[in-house]
Image (cartoon, rainbow, N blue to C red; front, side, top):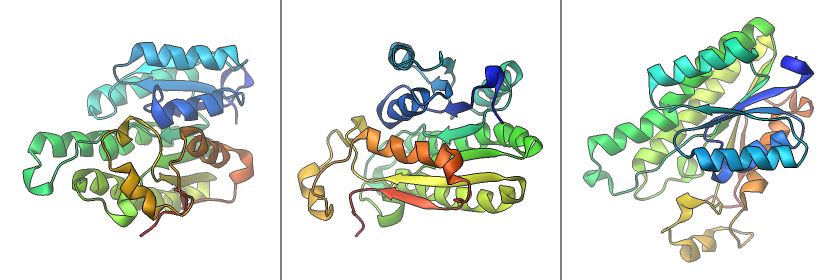
Length: 247
């Protein structure tokens, strides 16, 4: 069911940079009305919105809020839904990393990563799912990470948050399938974003059969498929976009 003006609508969290920006562009240029969430980088969000419009896509709705702040996120999402209706798809992409050895991880770093990466699933997902359940349709795509599947030294907090997303998404898929809603996970490997800065890329490429770093667009294409009508019989799945990287 399309939203206002007959357009399909999608809320993309963390949509102003990296993989999130690529997802916003992929969906926006495919004709989706993108609710482009960002936390602080308004200039980056406006640039993504301008690129969508320049390519002929519907004008995005810019939505500034912190998914890790429960009250702020729930208030903002409710306002969006009141103004534009329940979106047809939700892409939970927002994420942060605060890397370091586990024994030196402070409480603030742990709490920030879990709040943004995992609790955001609740604060943003809950109000959107209520509308999808009433409408009996919807797509939810969650961005996890290969760190959740193979582990990653120095990223215990990050891997814990991303692993929790996989478990949460699979459980939610079972809950909402009878109402025609699909829930899937896209799990990127090494992708050229800010998060890769400082990582030992040359050493890690030895574990990537395709022998190269992925591009944000390659992840975005997988997300666009899972949001589409063509993916109507796909739910509870984890799609790795990682060049064959595993162990």
